[in-house]
Length: 293
Image 1: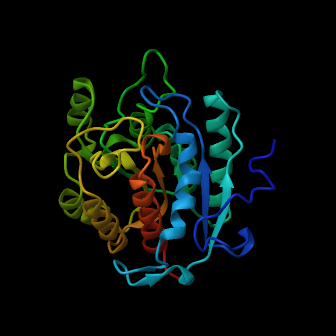
Image 2: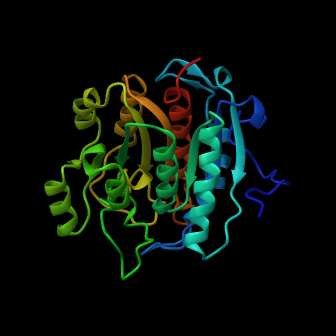
């Protein structure tokens, strides 16, 4: 089964024009939204992020780096069997396992948050001492949702069970079941409620030298900054704070081995605030997260 459309030409992320063989970073879309509990449509997020990137400056004033300093291959969106979550997740795991084997730095575009789970699985297989930084409005610590274990509300619980909860660091959390917060408090995982930058600054020294995967759900932003998402939650952070968080990670001593940004839903954002914020965050992650040559 083909993983990508060989004829893909509907627009790539700005300056992501390198062939796979010469790239250090691989940008790829995971257009899946089969398990969402509120608003569908995030499968269209990856392509809209690419389209919005045309308005970006190629230079980051935050990091004093330029996109011409990195080599990025945009693989396009994965060809996934629509409605088949289990098969789709398996294909994502296989593909990202290949990226890790080839020494590429994966940057995933979602899609619902469940798409992070197979990537974390392949990262766990590829790297020792793995930790996860999770930035989100929602705890995502449920064991199942309406009887379904493969749900966008379960990936961080699954991650805790795979890595050990003490290796999972969640920031910005402001929504979830009481049982999810009880699990966080009793399991040994690290959860910071409401805010991101300041608690992240305090926790990053604990992760110094470790291999870390970073997953960002765009709904950590207040709906005023990111209305185009599947499960918006009032009371979120600003886009400035999220950019500050990315900068803090970039300038820390953690070894980021991959990242993703998920839950952009273009249909609910005619002003394109969400995709504009998302593509800028992707630029900053690509410039700041991978080890510099």
